[in-house]
Amino acid sequence: MQLNGKRSYGKIASLPPEVRNAVDNMILTCTVRLPEIQAYIEEQAGVDVSTSTISRYGKRLSETYRDLTIAQENFEALRKEVEKYPEQDSAEILTRIASHKMMAALVSKSDKDWNEMRADKLLKEISGLTRAMAYKQRVDIQNKDVVSAALDEVQASVFSALADEKPELYRQVVQFLDKKRKEGL
Image (cartoon, rainbow, N blue to C red; front, side, top):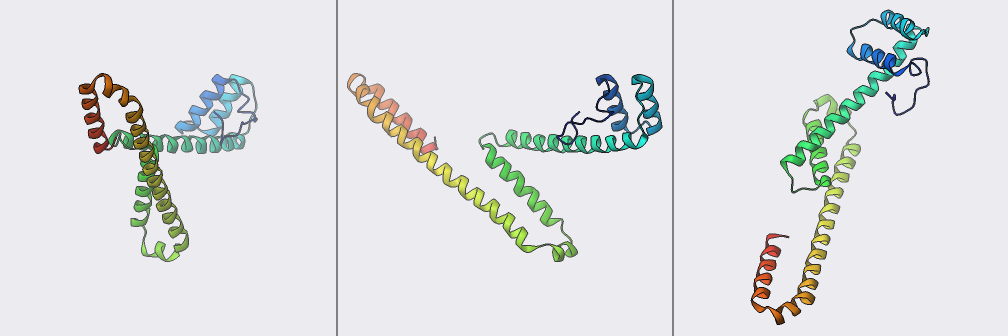
């Protein structure tokens, strides 16, 4: 496993993969003491490592594992939001999650925390989130205008030929498009 996004070149990282994986499991399960891990490495790979080396490696491994766990939890939260609101795009869902986390943090603050908190930082974060939502809404409106313009162009060019050749089908298609436009296509 890569530790903290950096490739590790230490003694433990250089062990054969099956030995290193076993050592990783021993460390992450917290069921084996450092001297026992040290003896296992000596026995399986013939490499002499100190318990402090194992401890440092274990600390970095645990931090990396924790970061991966947090990333997986965040991805799972995003996946659940996508399932709940399939009509929303990922930017809206991420904003919804960020807003929820910010509100949860604000609600959980004690009086002491409020007194120590920098109001300018909090206001800056809220302002940034508000600007992001406003920008997203503006882009959505622009995109909707583009879709409407495209539909109008298709209707004008293709339907002029359709009106001449099949007037009944032309009326049905125009009614269908008008209905879809009103529904927010």
